[in-house]
Length: 423
Length: 91
Ligand code: SF4
Ligand code: SF4
Image 1 (cartoon, rainbow over the protein chains, first blue to last red):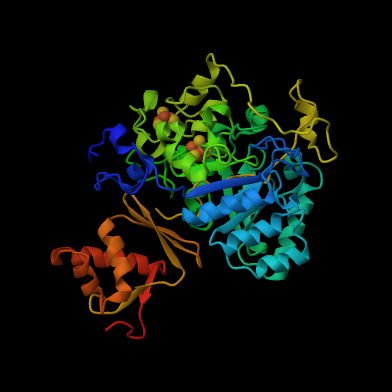
Image 2 (cartoon, rainbow over the protein chains, first blue to last red):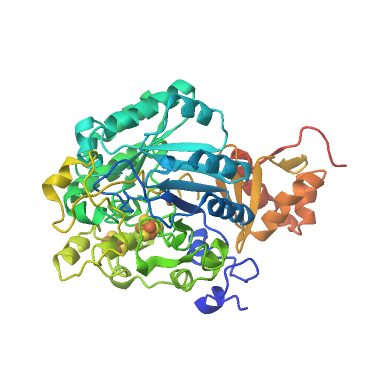
């Protein structure tokens, strides 16, 4: 093996035996890939009690091919062997899987810590007490508005009350430091201070993430994504509140609001980790490059049919490609490229923009120009939305539904590329 | 620090990576990166050596780099990845 940067050599296998230049920065090392992911998301089910308009995984109905309890245990065993120290569990609504609490305990017993995302529906006082008694479990409640009007607009009627009840139950049980996870939208971006106050009230930590046009999010992105002037306000707010607020490293495309020397970069990795440090295992065991990239183009393999998760992570052609040096394309000459790196791959893909060009929300305005040009939106390659509208369907869908859809549903979503991570 | 006995914290696990290792603390859920293979050897060797200096020497770190390594170790100590050994366990 050579120790040059020639990517075929450097990436011929991703394991500890390959010589890599040691003088690379950590970000450069990450770009070449790791033996195991740092930020692994595992969606346990596509089933959900809600039907959020912007669900990143187009959840609603359970997939009949969903991994069985035994298959899930085997995945956990493998994560333990790979030393994947923690996993972000989501869905769908993971807690409605009957074996959810069992799998949670199984993971913790096998040195795999769990952070799970939920809309709160099953966080009863009893479950809250159980959670408070565990050490390696973190709970993240999804809430997309600091008031019922704003939240229920996208997450559906009653979902605000459900989330608040869950937070109350956790606080009453003495659960420390729950997370309130907010997808920032045009409608809630004005409520950042209120979200912070809400988190403080429940002894929780606020986590803000970016709305990506993934899953059903593609249908509502034009209407929900923050406007350019709102993005600037968000950036300023994050800089002012940085220390106390988590972002899952999801706003690095806003770094370009800072000075050109990169000193305004937000804390975090500032790179797209898809297939390099981030990935997703979906409910049927399919492995995708990123939770926001559930599409055939980003499907690396399956844990059941392709020899297990380790095999897929280390050997799949797609992941090897993603770990080879990428060109910056039209962004390469931008003075903010070092901190922004062209933004989010999934956001570009699902808005029909070239992957080596600017992000659709490029703060220099190149994204808007690109969006105004010719582009073809990729057809979704899977959809678990409910076929008939349920009673929890958010109102906005009735106003602006895609004509070819009869309904839509949810997720407790919001993945955490690299959350909680100190570079 | 050089003359003190240290050890890796009990709730920390290391995962080897091409650049060194990833350290995860199950208690405070912090993730840290040991950016050089030598640093990994040092951290793993702490518990078996009478003091930090011996761990550095045993890992083959030249004396003129000891200060830089102490800085890195202090960073790890701040995240409770390593801690002072209160009882002299290794002779
Ligand atoms: S930047 Fe986008 S595509 Fe890349 S890891 Fe983050 S969410 Fe996924
Ligand atoms: S041109 Fe590209 S690198 Fe520059 S700010 Fe826009 S998206 Fe980021």
